[in-house]
Image (cartoon, rainbow, N blue to C red; front, side):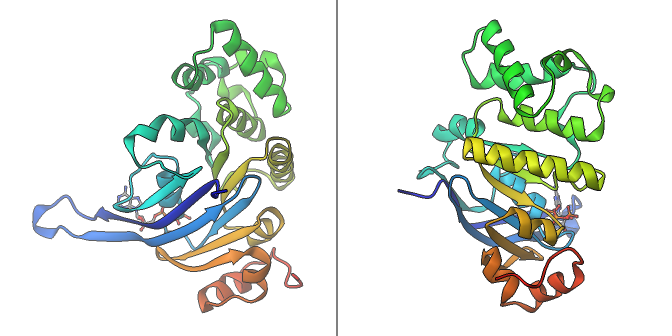
Length: 262
Ligand SMILES: Nc1ncnc2c1ncn2[C@@H]1O[C@H](COP(=O)(O)OP(=O)(O)OP(=O)(O)O)[C@@H](O)[C@H]1O
């Protein structure tokens, strides 16, 4: 059976200046490779500017790589004919939950859009699905009628997770999903993500600066240094015996992770 989700030699560069006399390319990803199975979590770590968010955007189709391949259930999803499957199955949550919620729309209105685009549901089926996902993340159905600003940061992240779940995706790409939250709320959201993973066999690509959290939350880890993949493997292996000096330095600089990994 093929892996659920995999990347082969993903490369990306950006044009660094709009001035035609000073044009140049900044290569942000120099060949990223990974594979992920259902129910697994791949963490992506690296210093600020190492290319983590660029990779996340590429994985959900918000940006295109210059070259490389992305496979979902064995299909090359960079091909146009698989666009819909990609949209349905690989969804994203952000550090700032408000980024995926329109401040002028009620939660229901924000949730209608992916259901319109991704399903043939009737109005009543859409209503039922919205209630279902709100309940899955521990929120009351009547919250659907409220606006994003009436919720706490933790509740807004729950809503963003609920919205990401609407189309029954198999992969969720989470870009620093708890780093903007208070520590106690972080733990609640992490536990929610773990429970959802158990219930739904979800795979996560989890971008984080927090190596303690990565150790707790992930099966595999991919380390990016200035866009170069310097390490990739099981978290237990990489954290106990890092191959690169860069990973060692990241680990030494991180207070949260436990050295006694076995
Ligand atoms: N649209 C863009 N145009 C030009 N350069 C970009 C663009 N998006 C990102 N970059 C550059 O690509 C590099 C990687 O950025 P990216 O946001 O992916 O890093 P990151 O690891 O997610 O950083 P952080 O942890 O701070 O979020 C940076 O040098 C950034 O300035």
